[in-house]
Structures are given as structure tokens and as C-alpha cells.
Length: 313
Image (cartoon, rainbow, N blue to C red):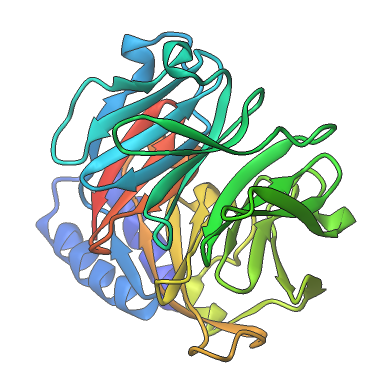
């Protein structure tokens, strides 16, 4: 009933009638609607930068924030960029061909190792200090198509969406091994790891692997979400946070799911917590490719094409 009434009021509002009563009803109904569906409306956002303005050939593939800066990989232009979190700025070149990279595809940060890690198509996996020096970890994995890399417990995990394989790179022994393969991981677009491995399949659904085995994944309280969780583009998680963040561009939203308590990593069900939803006319949230969460947990950085969008939460 509330959803139908909400829709009717919205349609009346869209007619731009100069009617204070309709406006007041809309505001009241919005408040009720948001509360019932655990919605936190995204009322404002900042575009920190549009990389393509300065680098027209830019094709950004990953985003990572660390120590007040945001890092972006651009394999097409063969750069790794950095921009300050605090204000809109033209990105500066952090790594380039002249400093030793070749085709930088994905970047991540390991808190356990206090270092950035970069996967380069021609150089393989390297660690990157904040002053820009590179140290090789493993050579490129031949015959693979690495789609994403993530850090967990001091090691780096690499998703090969060509063969559906997950690799673990040991940053101490400078070696790697294949953990497992699954046909479900072929053409997967991203993954996250916290003991479980969560991946976004080619059809936009969430896959969960526990002990290297595909296992059930479900969302409780999903009736409050209004829309089911499909057409996902990216999932964000690490071992140091309590929630999963799921990008759902088809509904202009970021859905937050609660992880199980420590030690309960084989829990099947994940509880819906809330959703950040944008109701405006901009298409910027229709192109959500990836995200990074600030260390304080108060800011989300969204990669939308070549734009970096900042949302305070």
C-alpha cells in the first residue's frame, strides 16, 4: 500500500503542479518510505576528478585509497594515477613506463604488509612503496586474464576470469599457487575476500566460496530492500570491516550487508542492513564500476567510468 501511494504521489509531483499540499505529502511519504526500506538517500556527491579530461585515452580499471590519496590504474594509457581525497584535483602520475610499469591493470592495499600491490600485464605482481619504488613478487601468470586482485592476511589473491581460477601469491616466499577453479568464475567481474571469497558472476549475481568450495549465499530481511539484489557490478569487503558493500547500478544504490561474527565464516545468511540510494537525474550512478571505502569508514569512493565520485556516509 505504501509503495503504491508513494508512486502516485511521485507521479503527481512530476507534473510540476504548484501545489504545496502535494509537496508536503511527498516529503512525509518520502520519510516513511525511506524508513520502511532502510534507505539512506544520497542527497549530494562530489566528482573529485574526471581522468579523461586530462588523459583522453584513459580507461580506469581499479580504485584504491590509502593515506589521504586515491590510486587508479589505467592500462590503456599505461599510468597509475593518484589524487588527494580532500578536494577536486587533476590526477597526477604516480607510476608510468619511466618508473618501471608496463600495463598496470589492478591495484590493492595490504594492511598486513603496509604496502600497495599492483598487477601489471607484462611485469606480473609487484609491491609498490608510497614513494613509488617497485619490488617484484611473481611473474605474469601465463594464459590467464586477471580480472581483479585483493589482499588478505598478508598475501595477494588473483582472479583469472578466463579459466575461472583463483590464485594465491605468497608475498614472503615470492611464489604463487592455484587455490581452486570453478566454471562459475569464468567471466567474473570482481571479487572480495575476508576468509570467504565473494565474486560477482558474469550475470551479476553474487557467488560465495568457503574453503575453496562454492557454497550457498542468501540475504535475510531482503523484503525490506524493495528490489532483489541482482545485476551487481562490484562487491567490496576486507577482513577489517563488519559489512559487505554491494554496488547495484540498475537501482542507483549501494547495498550494505552484515557479515557474520568472527569465527562464523561458514554462515550462509547475510543480513540486509541498509541501502544508499540516489534519486536524482544524473546517470553517474548507473555506471558504478568499483568502490573503495575510506579508512574511517565515513566516505565511499565510486569509480564511474573515468570519474571518481565521493560520497560522505
